[in-house]
Length: 151
Image (cartoon, rainbow, N blue to C red):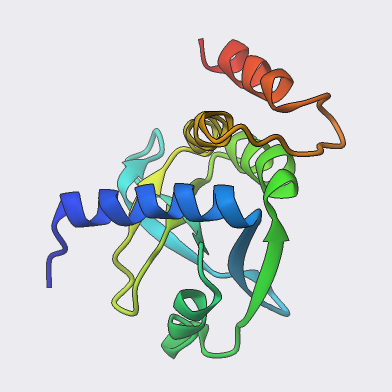
């Protein structure tokens, strides 16, 4: 079953809006770590699919994916500020990508972690929201740092 790219992108845009409003992201975690998959869009230098960690904006959507190979996983909350400054930057450094809003058939949007930070900062700023970070003074500071890295 092929999911339309526009549908996946729209679910991703909803993800960005929802987590920007709630300040919470959900992942699936087991004793072995967070739920991972292989990218269908990004490859390493050898042509192998890059590892991807999946995240959701709603707890119920994350829970619905805790089946089959992820049946032992439990839904875990991650504060948005921590996700942006630790998870996204760390995943970028580790060469991983992020999957958002995956469904029970494991169809979802794939995005580079630093690109996701820029999407989230744009959404937060458009709504006049700021977050409290540990490593950055404010959202503009994080955004400036990411833009310097990506240029």
